[in-house]
Length: 390
Ligand SMILES: [Zn+2]
Image 1 (spheres, helix red, strand yellow):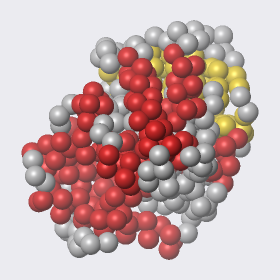
Image 2 (cartoon, rainbow, N blue to C red; image 1 turned 180 degrees about the vertical axis):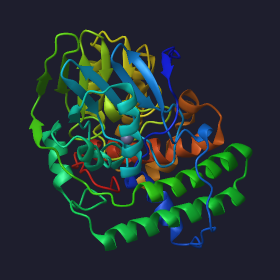
Image 3 (cartoon, helix red, strand yellow; image 1 turned 30 degrees about the vertical axis):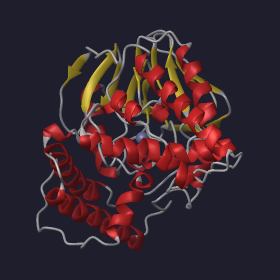
């Protein structure tokens, strides 16, 4: 991936997330971890990347992004200025992150937010929406039909549609549990990279637990099938559904004049997310993305990119898993045995190098869940969107 050299505007204060589905391993570990939390847990440091940087990706287009990996994922948010108002792509991952985003947006432009496009249903992209609408109640909210339906479905989302004190307390307690678990892992970490990673994760969960107070899930007022345009003389916006990929309703945003392509979690760096994904269709969707003549590609997580190198790497990774799982499925090998037999260490090396902390999460967030999806697909079983990705 060619490093991007874009204007970094006024760093400080912004988004976080909610992405419970990525935390199945933590949830399992919690069953045995003591749920003790120190009195005043430390909060994120600037190098933790919890409060994302403002990156100007084109004239009138900014992304609030963070290049680093986070155990509790932090979804990018993109701000697009049109003549009569601002359009957001995604909403921040918590009410707290959305409040910080609102302050940043107001520093960049005095225009109102007139529309919010949600790329997919995962909480790290949607849990700030209610807060954004408190600031700009007249804003349109837009997603694909599948995403709109998930946002209405209490079984998919981890916060209710209307504030419920008991659910809020339960979620807070769960996050305190994650915090306690990450603190115990700091002590147990076998190497400096993992120790630093768990320390950053504990600071992140301390902030995230507070940021998620009062969170609710609201769905969008508008849904589209394949395309929706938001015209503007200088910065027209094309919203497209190109097929299933990371979820069953990933929206892509294309700015033809600026040649900026915002792709949600179809592309995530440095570690892609494999939960509940659609391997063969994801490959096709990536092929379609490669036909766009973009100057800047904004992933769902990680820094904006200026070439198709990383797109190609994800496509190759998907292809490798599919081609390795297919013969095992034909032989009737179980998923557990397939996991034991298959080795993806070269793939891990290509994405994250030798870093043991990132290697761990490459396995947990990418290979593990993606192998499940590829196995199901090879057997012709349905892949269902859910919090656990199972
Ligand atoms: Zn995400």
